[in-house]
Length: 254
Image 1: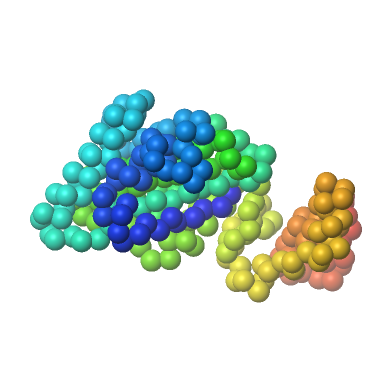
Image 2: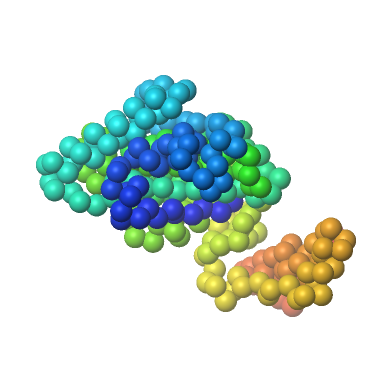
């Protein structure tokens, strides 16, 4: 699973509040043409910390107006001029198809990770692209206190760690990122690895050609994934010895 913060422009959608972005992720924006919205199916939708119907474009527009009203009240009281919209996308790996309940749980977990768990949000799951992915539109305004909360600095790292936690909880493949899952003494552990430690060599042209010809991963691509991860786990284990590394190099593991 890969998480990405979608930055809104300072003009256009951001200035017009939640309406345009909610319409976009719900595919109610028929003017969008990249690709034409009418070619897509209606996404599965969900609400967090909001009680409303979202079955029609008009109902979804009303939800956006409710979120706008909260932001407008904060602007009136303390001259808040920032962007109240926080837009994040979670992308599952190829072949993974989460249930609606799993998506809802993943959204709530991510909101908790960035400190927006009590804020209003709407999510839309898109299944008609190469990878299932959910768009999450969250208000940065706390609906009761009226204060601007989250996501705080370094939200990318918080989201990446949350992705590993969701993968473990729901049984998904582990995507590459600053946080990786390694086998520890008590089971899988999520640890931070800096870029040089997780850098994977780009496949050579011959390897890429072999993958195309056989319609399967090349040896270079295969060995850089599970076997390489096994060696990394062995190297970073407590009290690692050379025999431990040698055993990790025996494939498939016994």
